[in-house]
Length: 137
Picture 1 (spheres, one colour):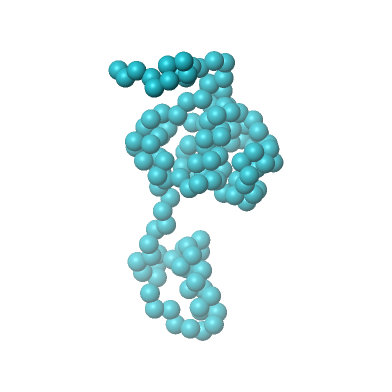
Picture 2 (cartoon, rainbow, N blue to C red):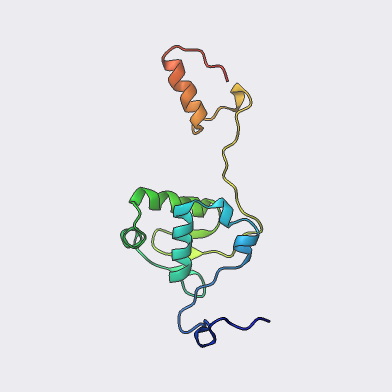
């Protein structure tokens, strides 16, 4: 075991509690999150109790993190979809890490049958069709 660099400043848990598993970095969870997702996740970890519960209103979170409401909503929803937090409209819960990260990368379209209205490529195809242009993938 190594000796601390500054022995009179060794961290201790006094009162509140914040904890992030080292697996968060080692198993790729960090790499799947964008900037605002990381910011919101670490904030929620910092302010939550031992069960991962916390209550902060969206306006307070946006103010403290210096992000817009839209950025907050997108980050919150992505963290929920990645199974890292739960939110009931009032309380947040930072969840235990799932077995592996949820990667929300876009699915490539391989043929016209793969088109989905939420895919940006499909939206582009719809716009091109509106102008009666042929789309060649």
